[in-house]
Length: 446
Image (cartoon, rainbow, N blue to C red; front, side):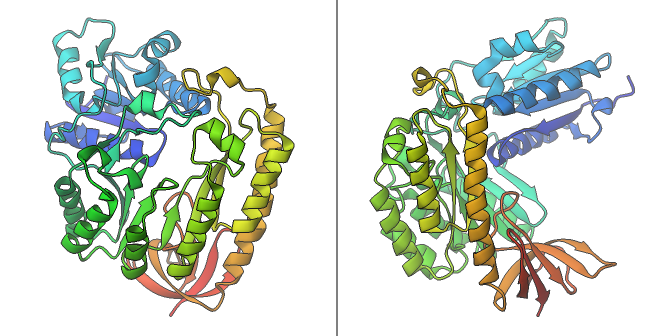
């Protein structure tokens, strides 16, 4: 094999939180002298950070591992890491051939320990590193918890989850909530500031639960005050994934008063019919939701609301689905994501089975998104003539076109702003909106 000694190739699957773990793993390896390569055929170690959240994600993980295993050359080492290995290590060993090592979500920071054990005993069939720990460790191993993409970055503030939503396997995969210290988070933010990063996206399973395990009350607000003070040159701070019932008045006031804390609320509600929400073991007081969203829109000018819903959950009759449809029409969210229910063994929803046919689930997604498309177009059209700050992330010099995002759009999941004019990557430019599409805006540099 034509390889480079002490080199690795790493592919990250799944969500942004997984991407942060992958980046941190890569940083640990680099600190030990390993070189990251983009070509798997040249690397000594092949690492797949898997996703195991739902069946489709697991199938993708298996496919990627099998593809690397099939093309593996003599002397190459294949390691499976992350969510799927944490929950399905035995199944994974049966489904794939050629894996040399496995490490889970709660011990990925021990990647060097796994590699050393493989180097000491390369003849062993599979090296497993799953220490008997219930939670992700607090030892940060001296690396950041960030994933930089252009002039934007994800910054993880906590891991795990103490919720027990009936449909969700995350607590089984990640363990209960483990919050990072404010000092370590601020250190990461200051590092990003020194690089000239323009946007920090704070991520966790639930950012509003930050600090609960550390004995903090309204820990997210405490953290935000520290970040805003200690990293004053970061112009945009965005929060991803808040929990119904945990949006405090202090939080609302801070978002209203601090322009650097973007007026963007991502609150996955999952449904709107109280009986379905109770079965999901989710907050079911929809009047609280209505009152809170109304209050936030009243207090925070230009507030953008994003949510996600699950359709096809067991017990979702046509009438209960209509309740969800009517709620979408009533609230008029700026962005929504809709997913079909995925049956997961080991969750508290397992006894309910998966009685709703796939074609009905698909039809329900289409019906919601048809309504949302009209809402989104109407909201975008209302912005024509307005001025928005846009973070430039791409450019076409020949056509004099720039591509970026305003505060209204989170990276990778929302829309874009197509801009006529000149500018540089990483700049935040003021743009006048001249036209609107369902999901994207068109404008000119002022």
